[in-house]
Every structure is written in structure tokens, then in C-alpha cells.
Length: 505
Image 1 (cartoon, rainbow, N blue to C red):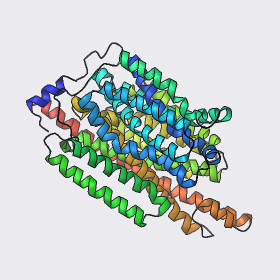
Image 2 (cartoon, rainbow, N blue to C red):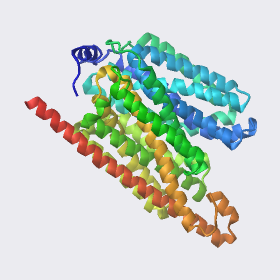
Image 3 (tube, helix red, strand yellow):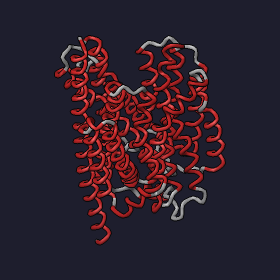
Image 4 (spheres, rainbow, N blue to C red):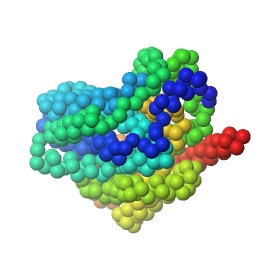
């Protein structure tokens, strides 16, 4: 892909210095804290669902919108937020994201109706989109290229830490305070983060000053929000329902218009020429397929732990924690970054996918061994995630000009949201299809089937049918992850060879 002399000059002004920012590790701690707040908010909310149902009189549809309002707004705005950070300044957008997230948290904590809470969650989604894109973009700016892999590893491990700690923190807070406290605990972190961002984080932006792509921002926001909504609502309303089909049609149409517009506008928000870079395409393919397999598989695992093995939500969360803790340990210690440097990106990505696929197969086939089989699978997945997620994020961000780091972070976040939602939808559909075919009674869910079962023998067959559905879905997820590893590794290897040929020439 070629760039104009003006573009190259603008990009050179934002390239990370060779030695990195003198306070880069302290700054990384600050933005990781902000990132952790966003991740914790989602996991904590899941624990609070029973309290919200009792104290606000929330219906099932209300609960769904409390969760989905945040996801829809955040996923729809990720590309726009990244573009705005590049144009107007990543420090400004990081501070704005913190402020908006804090105001939304305050409104959510003080809400006295489901409508107010849903609106507050949507406001938090705006702040979350700005935070997720600007934190990764700032990491790329303040660290030297040689340190990018380790810094991104720590950045990505924060999400795993939030996944592990969310249910524990939520359970503790709800045991001692009312439900609104799960949102108000964000406020001290937001204040601390704002002070640290203002005093420590350097400003960086694309000094070329591209004109804002307003129509592209509108189209990407509507298209991504519609796509995520169709994926989220599919399992509940039915994939062939009018609501889901209409929303999916809107998503496809609007995203097609977005691609057409971006290919013609002089200053595109997302330069489609990025996809001509095999390193970018390989990272995109790997990221979508890994989040597809992982998101769906973990969604199924939590159901298996609770419905089949009989664990409560907190107990199930504790038993999935080894996955997240493995990611945190390997990334914070620098072990994953050292492996990545030794193996190279293509081999590291392939190895990580093989490990994760093996972990999913272990979980699917070793259920008879009790939790020991699940633990083995979680540890394999954790090692694979610790190695693969930073490798693909680094490959994707490295394929994008430094002046477009915010857009790169937006692409990374958008693909993760898309892959995760698609994995939950598709693997959930595999589970439901298999369960419906094998269950001895007709029912749309496991609790309904158990309620309709007559006698312990029939209940046992219902649980066996559900377990078989989970196993089939896990194996489909394992296949998707392995396919992602092969595709990503091949494309990344080709990109490396092309780069070496250019250097030798």
C-alpha cells in the first residue's frame, strides 16, 4: 500500500521513540487501571442480575437491555472513537472516555428505575468505546517498537484479570451494600485515572489533520450496532424471526454502504487498503476466529458448570478463573513476550491456536473425569491466549500506520466484539439443535426440559442430551480456533517473507 508524502510525514511525527517515554510503565499502569474498570463493569453486572430483578422489579427483557445497551453502543462506536482519537488527540479522548464512563456510573448507581439504568448503561458504553480504543493507541505511542509485544501482553492480560475478579468483587460488594454500589465503586478509579492522565500521559495525534469522515462514522455506528443486535437477539427471538432478519438486513446494507463510501472518500475513517496487507488480513482472520471459538466455548462452559454439574454462579466463576489467572501470570511476568520474540509471530500464533483448540477438545471429551478434565482444558486455553492474543493485536497494530493507531485499536475491539457475539450465537445454535434432537422431552431450554421430565431416568437422559450438545459445540469451537491459527499463520508468514524480500532488494 502506498502513501502520499504528506501522509508519511504525518505518520512519522507520531511514531514511538526508540527508547520509549521515560514514564511509560507508570502510564501503562494508569491506562490498564482504566481498562480494568471497563472490563469489571460487565462481569460484575452479571452477578448483580438477581438483585436487580428483586429491587427494581426488572423483567427478563429489562435485564437483557441493561447488558445489551452497553454492548451495542460500545461496539457501534469503536471505529468512530478510534478515528476521533487519531484526529483530535488520544489523551483528550482518553480523558473524555474516563469522564463519560464516570458520569454514566454515577447515573447508574443512583438510578431508581430500569429505564434510567438502561440509559445510564448506554452512556457508559460511549465512555467504554473511547477507553478501549485510546488505551491501546497510547500503548503504541509511548513504548518503543521492541517493547510493544510485552506492553500489549500486559494490556490484554488486564481483560483476563477483570474476567477472573469480576464475580468475586461483585459478590463481595453485593453481600455488604445495595446493588448501586457495583457502579459507584468505579468513581474513585475514574477520578484517579483522570488525574493521572492529565499529569502523565503525553498527547499524540495525526498531525496531518484529516477532515472528519462524518458519514463514515454514522454508517459504521449504525451498521455495527445493528449487526451486534442481530447476533445478540437471534437465540432468543429465533434466527428466522422478522426482527432478527430485518436487523441483519439493515446491518449488511449499511456496512456495504460504509465500505463503498470508505473506498471513495478522500479521507476515509477506515482505509480499506489495509486489507491488502497480508499481515493485517492474517491478524483480522485470526482474531475473529479465536474470539468466535473462545467466546462461544466459554459461554457454553459456564452453562455446563451450572446446569449439569450444579455449581452456583460464584462457584462457576471460581472454577473458570484458572484460565484468566494463567493469562495474567504469563503476560505480567513477561514469559509470553519472551516466547513470542523467540518463536516469531506466525509460529507463536499457530502454537497458541493449537493449544487453545486442544484445551477445548479436553473440556469437551474429558467431562467424565470431573473438574480435572475441565481444569486441564482451561490451563491449555490460558497458555494459548497468553501467547496468541498479544501476538495478533501486535500484528494488527503493526500493519497500520502509527498515525492511525486509534483506528487500529477500533478495528481490534470491533473484531473482538463481533467474533465473541458470533461465537455465542453460532455455538449456542449448535447446542440447541443437538439438545433438541437428543432430549427425550420437547423443550426450548434445559430448565424447561428438566421440569417436564418424568422420573430420575428421564432427567438423566435430559442432562446427557445437554452434555452431548455442549460437547458438539465445543468441538466446533475447537475447529474454528484451529482454522484461525492456520489461516493467520500462513498469511503472517507470507507477509514476513514479502517484507524480507523488500529489505533485501
